[in-house]
Length: 244
Image (cartoon, rainbow, N blue to C red; front, side, top):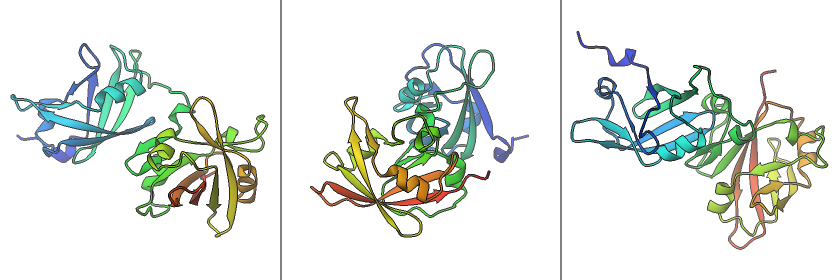
């Protein structure tokens, strides 16, 4: 009796030799997949676009892009990756080490999911549809202690992902006009650090306090206006409140 493809929701792979550059998908599972050439894999570390290649024996492999997934998740021999099939070539991935315990990643590094339009991080908040994204590039940040004026840092900050400001030609941008959900605009200065990162600095504290942000809130920064050659860019900020 043929298996119902809708019942086939998960498969797992144990990392063994030669897993660093490509990964073979189980043949039995492949029967229920469309032969698309690009897969999307989501995890607590981000979103990856990975090329899917079909071999002469009709086996499917994750190839180009898989190596980056391996590096970002620090996969080693014996680790286990559980794939949840969402639809078509979309998967959620859960990583476990050799002890069968789910791996824990650096919270700061795991803060953002990289997406095709920018970066997003609280996956549940995005899927819930609490706001409608347009065609503008965006990135999403979940509020942590270091974003708050209550932190022990001299001044709270928000890190802008390097790929975001580079790909959107913001290398000359020195300040942002942030428009909060009420329509009020806030001027926030950018600070360029030697290590190649850019942070929202002076002015962020006032935005945080006025909008009564707290740990767990999700802020989506949508780049709405970025004139070529200008030192000032504008962003609309969408806020999804934490459920506690």
